[in-house]
Amino acid sequence: MFYSFMRVLVRILVFIINGNARYEHKERLPKGNYILVGPHRTWFDPIYFALAGSPKKFSFMAKKELFKNPILRWILVHANAFSVDRDNPGPSAIKKPVRILRKSDLSLILFPSGTRHSSQLKSGAAFIAQLSGVPLVPAVYQGPLTFKQLFTRKRVTIAFGEPITIDRKQKLTDDFQKQIETEMQSAFDALDYAVNPNFKYVDVSKKEE
Image (tube, one colour):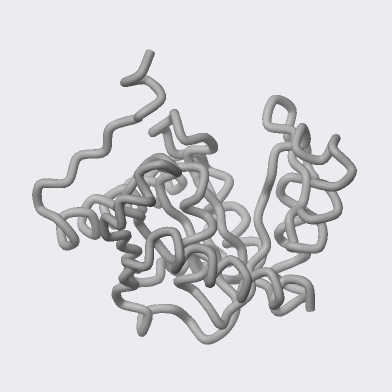
């Protein structure tokens, strides 16, 4: 209930602030649960991913530090977020999303690189997908990279790729994980090129240093 209310509220706010979003290839989204994976380019791209994937509802990981504030913790919990210790993730970082994907009607938004300032893909997405028996769906965000830039009403584009299915009987060796990571990165690159052949991501935080 809270998630649905917040989605409507956020959709209205996003429209007022920017009002120029385009969602491409929604027909590629599976009917059941899935893991939406993409490069993390701005703090608000998870919001656009969730709006683009609507009416599907999503869960997502959030760093444990955000849960220290009681008000923010209440909002995050009721928005289907769960805490993860990025420095020492532990088994719960895998068990929690697997349980959500298998036991609820929530899909998962996951950024394999972990942070906005890393391009290194990690194996967690493939492991969670295999254990939960759901596909990975590549997605990319192109558009403003700061909240201030959103007000320029520059177009925001979310594009979805073809689902990547991992056989549950497949042994998840290091080589196979690298194969999945390569497949995800290739999908991101292809989607970016299809949206804009001249696209090149620039980390705004590093540019301003």
